[in-house]
Amino acid sequence: MLRRITHFDPAHRSQSRAGGLGHHRLGDRTTVNGNANSAPRLLATAVAAFGVYFCMYAFRKPFTAGTFADQELFGFGLKTALVVAQLLGYVVSKFIGVKIISEMPSRYRVVTIAGLIGFSELALVGFAYAPMPIKPMMLFFNGLPLGMIFGLVLGFLEGRKQTEALSAALCASFIVSSGVVKSVGRWLIADVGVSEFQMPMWVGLIFLPPLFVALAVLQSTPPPDQDDRRLRRERNVMTGQQRKDFFLRYWPGLCLLFFVYIALTIARTVRDDFAVEIWQGLGIDQQPSIHATSETIVAVIITALSGMAACFRDNILAMRITTLAMMTAFVVVSASAMGIRYGLLSPIVFMVACGVGLYVPYVLFHTTVFERLIAASKVPSNLGFLIYIADSLGYLGYAVVMLLPISSGQPHETLPFFGSLLITVAVVSIAALAMANGYFRRTLAEPSL
Image (cartoon, rainbow, N blue to C red):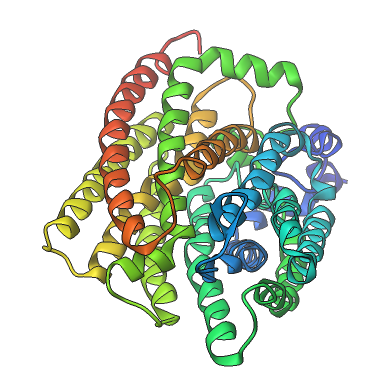
């Protein structure tokens, strides 16, 4: 009788009915005895999250490995037109995700991921065979479902003592995967003879089997335990009123953080989407492995730094230290841009240095900043809500930049533009982070919270 009573917890029962963003149906035995945080279980979750998002990039980024040289469409260089088309779909997806991801019951996550990926692959088939004027539309439909994958995967990881370490593994996937899938794409074009238009479809098909294996493992992830909920707050689905209340409570600081995120997304995505042109501008061409090599180095450094944030149990202290780390990273970004401009750095050192400098704050937004803000606040929220506001604004800003005449996509013009962009982003972001740090230091310390 005592054993049965021990397994009954009304909080768990109500949480299961709510179907919160970060939870599966709660198993009493798993939740009470703490197996949710066992090392093997957490390692499996981290690997599965890494695998799912790694494979997602095989459906999103391979087309950027093509140069589509000397081709134009609608008055733009063809590659720029394709990047903007997919990006618009991705932006729409992010705005939709503010509501859908913050309200998504956990039981629907895995099947939703599978359906969204399948739709994106069908769009790549259309991209391969549709007439030229229709190809940008196919990439729009390719980007439309993919923007919600990150939030669906993140829902398995948030609200835990180890969230930073788990999310660091997830974020490492989009650092490494972008370079790897572009290397696979360049290999298919250069060595196998696949056309630039059919290559994305084949890369997606190659990564379908490991995607489904990773999804199966992720599906078995247990929910956060009692200690997790005590330290990081319980994460449930949000109503429209709750989303409004949280934003209005912290809007000055949130706007500063979103501003930094927009600038950061623009610089990071230019580096990612135009990596081939940047490498060519640096004098390095026809080396498919260079993308994977540089990004793997970046990922190892970022994962180690981000995982260390889990060592700080105090949420407000963790936010302050994280903000200082982000400001330091932007100093590295600016220094790398100046170094390559004056010939003080080699191409590989420049790409790794600016990659680390951009990805440190970008990953810390996903792993620590918003996670600890929610944990330190007494206003209900979840990670998907904040991430998707930031992402939607960030990618919208990037879409605007891509439509400007300064971003032609030619190798001899892309590198100078990128260097100037890095310096500008670094300076304005350091200033905004300093103000945000002061705001949250005062606000989160208020007794009313």
